[in-house]
Image (cartoon, rainbow, N blue to C red; front, side):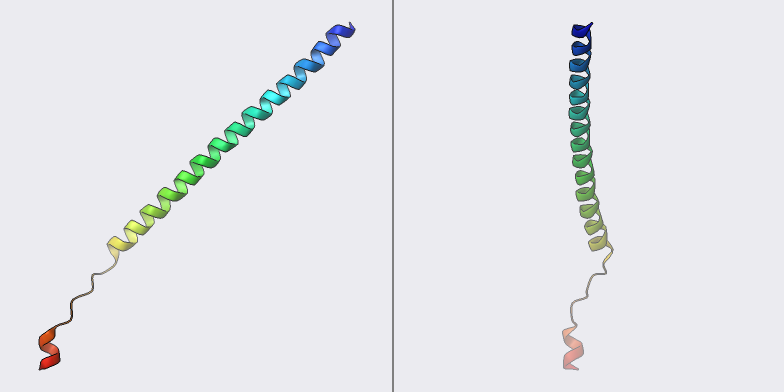
Length: 66
């Protein structure tokens, strides 16, 4: 009975370590996805902002002379 108890404890420790590793890898993946989304959002926002900005007209040389 003592060997079975030891094997059960070892199994639970291995299970906990495996679950912890899987959780850590999942959180790292989630962090990478969030970072990629943030970069894409910043780039898209900057592109939309520069696209919607009105173009400045060139100064009219005739207006200054006249």
